[in-house]
Length: 424
Figure (tube, rainbow, N blue to C red):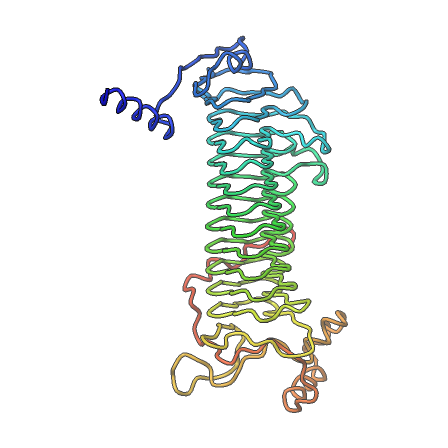
């Protein structure tokens, strides 16, 4: 009796941990994948042989759909190519293409519907779909090592997003390559997610965050989009070790964001490296901001942020800042500014006079752009000198009391010249 109870307990434990697998069903060209799905029991594996299949699939039970030698599944340019409503579904090794193009119906290559918790999509190629993956109210999903491209012949506004997350928790978006969509990643009301090791390019935004908290953005490459990483109306983000370069507008946008850490990122060759708008109580630390038109554009009451040990190198304008009073950066450890003209008499690695990011001339040139034609003239240089000597004429600025004499990033030259093609 005791032995029987032990066997029952062991079987229950194996079922809970997913180590007991069901049967394997095989689908060959000319056969129906949907018919195999309907025959399958919970936990079965459906192996799809290499071939071309035109079907719109519905998966409403826990099973694995696995491609052998990368078969192609076409949605026939209508609806969702694969729609998932069941829990614990795994989709891997397929080419999934040709969804419909109805934006109102959110047609997708793979649509994870509400309740499709713990779904896994990996090693798939999703191409010529309106949305690559739409994930709605499905928690703890894993989207890994997929290649996603959109309907490249459509105009940007008519495309869907590469991966769209809406009202989810615990998603892991790892190692995907996404391009030629509207936004590569669109994240709305989705919390405690991890975005790691993705390559996002040739889209409107590499990533578009809205109303999402406690997310990790790490080790991603975001390049040659209109905007790189856009964090808007969010809290408690960690954004570290990413590379945002060659975007035609901003590299990283921090808009209406609080209580977040942005550290050790490389922001290079963008129109604006950082665009910081209505951002408070954040930490920007250890970032390399190099060869942008504007290194950091600070606007709309962005204050009370800790900005330490960043390198601002060879930006045409290090900081664009118009406000009623100074904003202190580098209060404890300082930042490196490549255009700092001060000295270090005691050799401690910190400049002896504070760095000011802009002066009266800078402010006038932002308000009256044609004035830039006269920046090298004796009259403008005299105005700059007078502004330095008479505080009443001084413009409020970002002020760093501890400017560093050497940059932290030794290999910053490797990031010079990585501009959006129109800037060449």
